[in-house]
Structures are given as C-alpha cells and as structure tokens.
Length: 577
Image (cartoon, rainbow, N blue to C red; front, side, top):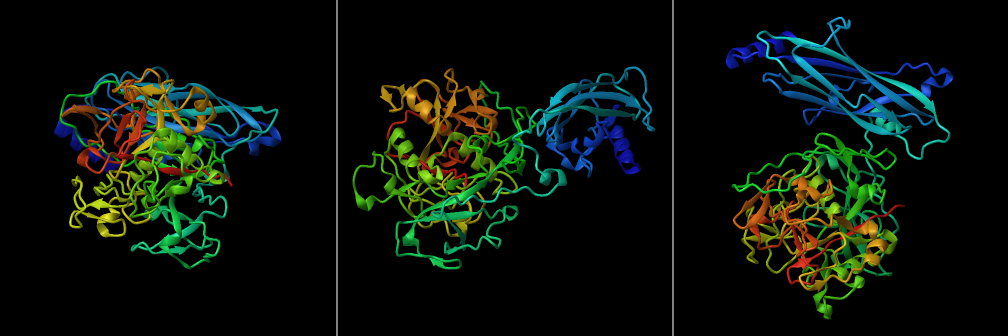
C-alpha cells in the first residue's frame, strides 16, 4: 500500500474508531506449460474482471495473464469483498484441466503456512475444465472473521495451473485475436439483401444514403446506425449522398449490435414491498462482441452474459423498428388481419392498433422473410432497453410519447406528461423535445419505447393459449414451429413471479418491486411491472400515451393477446448475410 492510501486509511480509523483488514491479492495464470513444440498454441487469458459487482478490467495485466487488485476496506465482522473473473482458453488444439491454488504470502511472495486468523478466503471453483475456445467464470472472496486494532495488509497469491489435453477435432468457435489483443470487436451492421439501405439522418429528419466506406455511425458518441426500406418503386434509384424523399420510404430500422452485459441484479423476486417506490436506475455495463467469440454465460450478479436476443439467432445484431409499426388508414379495411403489405415504420404516422396477437405475429413474420422479419420478442425489447441505459445510449429514462392521436415519434414537454395533441405539450421526433424520446437522446435512436400505443411482444406463459374466455389463436404446434421467435416463460408464473424472468428481458432484473397505489411498480423509474399469470398470458411493453410516470422503456405489463384500441407492435429483422 502506498503512502497516499495509508494516509486515507489512517484517517478512516480516526473517524470510525474501528479496526480493519485490507486484503491485497495477486491472481496469476501460469502460461509456461511443458507441452513441447505446441506450447505456443496453448494459452489461457483473463477476459473480464469485476470487484464487488463493479467492472474493473483495468486490473487485468497488459498480457491478460494476471489480475492484481486490492479489496475494499473490511471493517465489520462477516463483511466480504469478491473478485469475479472470466478465464478463456484461446487454444484451438488443446482443452485444459485447470487447478486453482491459493496461498497467503509475505511481501516477497514466500508462502506463510497455516490459516490467517483474521480473514477467510474462499475460491469458486477450485478446479474447472476449460475447453478450447471456452470462457468460464471464477471468484475469490475475502471475508473478515475477526476484528483487528491496527492496520493490516494480507497478501494472497492464486495460481491457475492448466494441464493441456489434446483434442480429437478442432472447435467450431474460438476466441478471436481481437479479444486477445485488446482491440475493439464491434459487430458491423448486417445489411442483408439490397432492400436495406444505410442512411445518414440529419437533426431535422433529412435522409441521405450513407457511404459505408466512411463513418456513418458512432456508438461511442451515441450515434446508432440507421437503415431504410423503400416503398416498391422500381423507377426510384438512390445513390450514395442522395437525399431520399420521405414519400418513398416504407420503414426505418436501427441497428442493435451484439453485446454482452454485466448482470446487475439476479432478478429473483417473488414479493413486492409495500412502500413508496425508489428510483434505482444505474448505468448498465456493456461490451460489444461478434458471434466469432464464445458467448459469455454468466447467471449471477457481477458476471457477464451475452445477451440472449443475439444468441437466439446467432447474429451479430438486430435491426429494430425505429418507430412503432404504423398503418396507412387511408387505404381502409379491417385492422385485425394478417397484412404485411400494410406495414409502415415511419415518424408522424398513426400506430397500428386493434390487431390480435396471432395476426401481429404473422404480419411481422411475413413482412420481409429474406431479412428474417418477426414480431419483437420480449428479450429483444430488453436488448434495446439495456443498450439505451448504457454509456452508448441516453442512459436515463426516455421521454414518453404522449400524443393522444397515437402518432409515432412524438415526445412530451415534461418527463411524465399527460396525453395531448397540443403542440405546446407534445412535439415530433425531429425537435429538441423529440430527441428526448429516443434511446440515444438524439435522432439516431429508437422511438416510442415509452408511451404511444402499448406494444405486444412475443413472450407468453408456456402451455397456455386461452385466458379469461379469449384464445390467442396459437397452438402447441405453432409454438414448436416458431419456437425461436417467441419467448416462453414458466407455466407456473403468477402476477408477482418476477423470478421467472429471462435474464436480459428487462423484467425481473428491474427490482426491487413495490405495491403502490394499486399497481406493481419497479425501482427503475417506477414503471408498471406485472408478470404473466393465468388471466393474462402475453407481455406488453412500454405503456401507452396516457400512463404518464407508469410508462417507460422498463415498463412491462400483461394482456390476453386480444385486439385492443391502445395496443400495437414492433417489427425486428435478424439478417445473417
């Protein structure tokens, strides 16, 4: 401990009048293994580290073979500090049996025999099998078991010893060299076929065809990639730099790049607190990755999980409808039909509502089959919501679309604005007020994730197709045929079984939950938070224009799947070209 840190600690002792133990650990990988001529092919590296739930990749050495860290000050008996890490076997030819050995050492790293009387150290796991290309998690926890009266440093050295095992065949996926070299691993937008046209979007909404050889998006600056699909106009040809007429545009989409995120809450809640809700929104830690990288499979707080919205299709990203799906009402006809040719995903159009969930599903599914179009899943909503609340997005609650005419892309002048059509209370997407309703806080993001119409998403209570006298139209055979397009939740789900969440879907992880003024609400902006149950078997997201503070990108409610005047939907594309 350097002098500066020691002075701080001494000050704390004076103020608190208690003892403490500060534990300094060095976690080292033994990468020099005797495997003959193939030794250069066998290497294990650290790819992630967090301390007490906070991402700390800065403690990983430049070579990625060591982690050096200090715990927080431990001042109370049973107080703990935990390092969580991910280790990756970058070899293609060798699996590894890894044994983890930890010892208490002196400042010269000489082993001190026996247990330390002040601190318990636990290691999980103590051994692991690490297949070629595989990533696994481990943890080291220091727990104070006896108070001390003087400052004390305890040094721990842990070594991961890997014994290589030659493989009979090469793995299908490996960690890419970009991860090993510490280079960015951003998944480029997949434009699929020639129907998706990349665009630049000016602040006033002017659309020009983007040059993909130049920078046309910048997620570090919250500028997300946008693309359009044109109305079928064979006579219309647009080249790079051309301004595209709004009348020629059928739909707008926004690219959500594949990423992994650090789990910030296990989401294992089954009871609501009877109290005034608190607001507990926090920046979600996100790291972009391509599908060449072995997915992270964490399941506990502080560990990393490749978002399931991407692993479901094994894609490098998803194109999410920039606005709620609209409908050309001038064409007339019934709204409650399967009509993929009526889809409009544009600003300033009326949202498509009064359509039952089976008709929504088939309309979206048949919209652009070559681009694997489909109704937005509940986990896909979660992927967009989480990215919005990271350093790459607006990182707060998006503004409600309070337009009571259900026009897409609008925003209220106030955070919890009441529904209105008054221009002094609601303005469109291409204004300073409008930007606040975007997931980026600027015009490049996704709109209508709060308010507008509430949106059905493809997430249902497993095995149940009818509720309260209404049947959704889906069958058990449908759920097999379209399995990857629908999130299935536990058949035992109830109104408050938030523990039945799918990690990443932005439901259970938004706890704690509160029973307040007749609603279940979460601690992320007090949005409504009702889970699937026997009476309501399909999820809805975002809330509607009149819900005020109860709406938001973390709002989730439930319904029958029936056609309602205030419920619509959103389209997602999952191209794999």
